[in-house]
Length: 538
Image 1 (cartoon, rainbow, N blue to C red):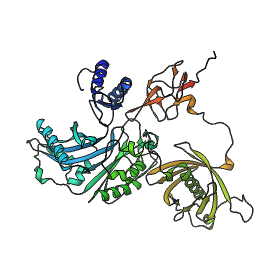
Image 2 (cartoon, rainbow, N blue to C red):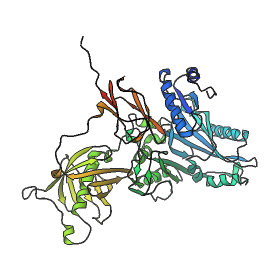
Image 3 (cartoon, rainbow, N blue to C red):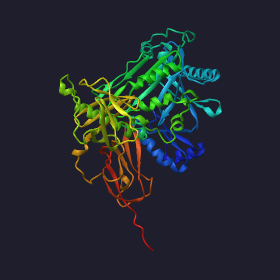
Image 4 (tube, one colour):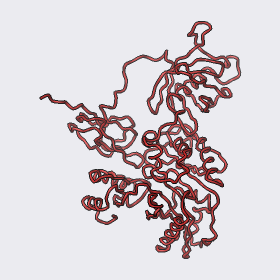
């Protein structure tokens, strides 16, 4: 349904006619904004309200359309290019099925596991649409294919502009779409016929976003502390950031793109993984580690669908083991120790390790350090033991592996090896920034002997609904004195043009409201404070 009557009553009526599951979509734009899946009539009104708010915020237009939700869809699109002289050609298809929140994250050309008959049907349909409207520029016709019905295609939409993923078409056809779009606008005729256009090899693109996949793709923003782009043969970097950038919550989460081209899909994928491992971004969390894991999965070689991430990570994506606190905390502690005891220089004193005498003669000296992850709040104690100059071991863990300083200190970032992985560390005072294979963490480190012992700790969030990301508080759904049940929505945050619903962690009574609609709140801000329900004895 895409009619002019946008009343709640009419939309609810059309939703019942179409049936569930159902997709609510913004009429004025895409990118996953203003798009909500609804599985039952009881949820329709709440999801419609959120979809309208997202659409109004992103596009200035709250009109909605409703369509049946295909349970296992593929998302393919055909690139068109036309001129003002009646010529129109296609530049083949792209596969865009791997998505999160209905927004593409990995795209490629050509599409794997696509029959020649379906491929030709997509080309014919896209060209027929372009000719029908006299299209004279670069544009994309998008389709949903029902994987459960032999890739039966359905028209989705036409984007009358360049797409984010246009580089995979450029690299496989050798045609600069930006240049051709400008020449077409200037009235130049296309220099090719359809039969002149061929493609070579395979191209895969990943979108690098400022977000935390391990926390439901929670937005991440703030100033960058470092940004070093990869330099890998066969890989193109389209970036919008540098080391002086600050990522704000006012725009889309995408920081840049990596696009790899190779003679085969396997070559393109390996080049892309190498580039992911070498894009060094510090200060914010990105989806680089998740992208690398997706490309490594056997399922990536099978037919894809938009459910790929849900099927691959049923409980949500999790931080890889080497970057989890119990592993990287040891590296952070070792890096801090190396920075303190191995200052740059070639004087004799610079070569002497500086352990305190905390053990009887003949025993290995030890140093106890308290480390805390700034992102997750995880904190613990690491007990280091000196094995040899440039080599320490964690004594607090069973069968702990040593951390080795590679190449010695030089005054710049430290390079360390632990558990077979290489890390780069920058130490500033009590803070240690770690980076390895696209994953960044920042740790605070203090000697345990210098820590004051206090019992004061932040209260658990069981008695409060807190902002799980920085954002703009756009809705408060409760007021003081209201009784709420576990899982009931209580507030809505907007961050990076998407809306996130905050729910009560348990049943209780709203005791106090900690922020007002229109406030920009940092992560961890108590929005709604709860009192437990009082049970009455009879």
